[in-house]
Length: 147
Image (cartoon, rainbow, N blue to C red; front, side, top):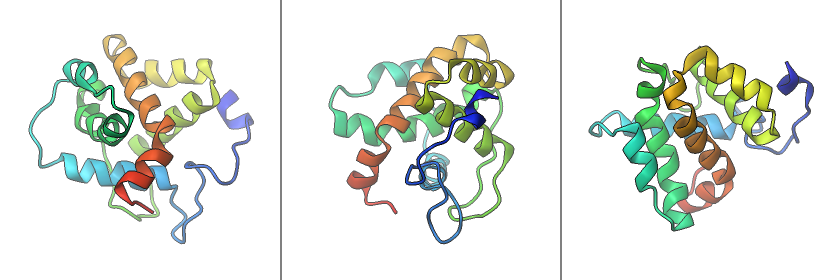
């Protein structure tokens, strides 16, 4: 696969640079998934439409909206492990692969990953949310005080 051939910088959100060997982005997503469990239902299409134009608010909200709506895109509840857990689930690996492919601009891999798990009607919104999280991860990291 093209995404695996491309080398990512060692200091990215996708590399395992913490003591547990877990990428910071994955811990961030796990934290958002844990928080989203106790919140009410949010429609995927409506959530994308109402994300704020303010970059700081949108950066903070994008990850929460992604994790709250991921079950709608997948058609089932995703398996997300606890923060800091070394083992990763299929859903976590799939989400990280999608994020890596979007960051690298690897359109064939993005297309393959989306078609393998997500109905076509949810592709656009899911890509928007994942791209928002990936692009603003450092910004979100600073705003919420993670890592």
